[in-house]
Length: 375
Image 1 (cartoon, rainbow, N blue to C red):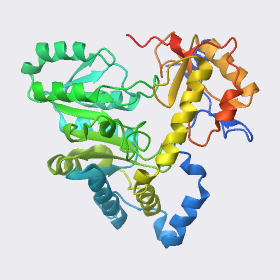
Image 2 (tube, helix red, strand yellow):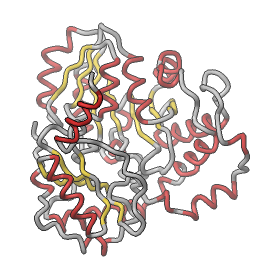
Image 3 (cartoon, rainbow, N blue to C red):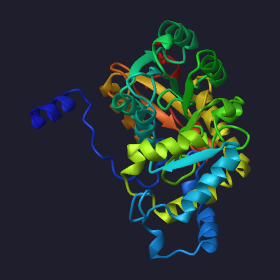
């Protein structure tokens, strides 16, 4: 491979990525996953620091969890997650990426099949590719298509897994978890749901779309991250004790990596324990999302609002127009989204003022409702 030519071809297609650096001071950040605005809450951090003795030993686990890195803060966090979700077990991973590349390859082999929504996140796709199982993709959010595929293929395999996100990262639309749960029961399958963009944000106690739709008990592997609404780092899977024990023995992305620093895990638990009480933050996020939807002339589905531009060049230009207005938003291009579906992705937080949304000017930029997610 000629690296120079490859980079030049990316540049010619307006698809060359560079690290953007910090958000310029004074700009309204519309590209953050800090959905509840907790990373800006100095009062929360101060309350945590006041109640938690901090020293150098808190800064690194210094080892994998299966060696000496399994510090007491892990057990405390996992117990908290078990209590909140009402499940037997939870297992914390270093990141959402580690979680999604580590679970399915551990639990499946060549006798198994995985049915995955066409628009699942890249980290899940990488996990599917690492698995020896047969991979079958169903049309995005199309449970009828999934049912037909299950009828055609399920009987050929030992174990079957249905895999989806709850709120999809690029389109902001929502899966019907109750329908998926019905299909998993009818076809004797496991249900794997990634709640990365819903955990902390949706549901009465902030436990995600699964809580909102009353489907927590139906999900065999409920995955979520701490790096978004919780304003920390790491991720977890809520599952049965049997699956947890199996993953501890077979999930390579957890086994062969250094554990999270104790200070990080302790902070995560501090925030997670407070999620049920963060109702006001969730309401503010909803209000900001509805304000943007009204301004853009589209329906509010979630706090992720895509604005389709089509070409890579038009996405770059649209982002520049909004930055000139004082709004920091980045273009999303192939391969993150399909060719021809480049867009701006507004990722909203409770820290944004509705008044700031009202002064946005979408003239000549495009409309979110133009996004075609049918295929």
